Image 1 (cartoon, rainbow, N blue to C red):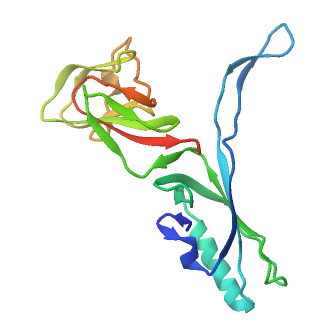
Image 2: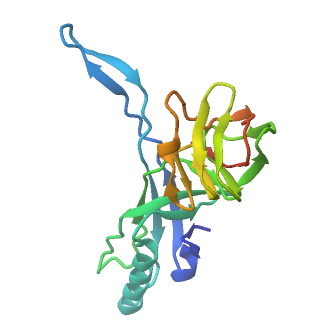
Length: 232
């Protein structure tokens, strides 16, 4: 079953799924041209987007009923922004996608089985449906083979000064954290209290903790929450 933004494709029309092709993540190396010598210097790897193509048949010979079914499939596939999709054989995982290719049905060949939908994942990783958590100062293990989505949350009854968070390699120091609901997004490298940025209190010389897989301990006050991610 293919579920997109909470609705199954098979529930909106009597489709017969022919194939699901999950494309690889596009690898785009970052390079810098050599000013004098030929060629370029390799800087780092960059992972781009990926596409998911769903091919299906729609064996309805009544042209009016078939068009209504095509309309229902099109309405199901269209969203204003990327939305979560669940695919067979990826149990417990989702991927955020946006439809970038709609079916092109033939008015004559009602029996055609080469209709397709194309989706693009701008964030190319599959991610766990469940979010996990651990108290700061406690060792925890992050599964997956891609950097997780990770954040630190804390409720402050009153403002606190000179607050530090560290994983043993990188240390983030905030001169002040106001009272309210704090969230430090380690993936986006932002910090806010009640949705208002507090990056003006981020002290010089600090370095953001980088989300990673494996065993980690983050010291400080609050709770670490993370969502595991995979390349496949």
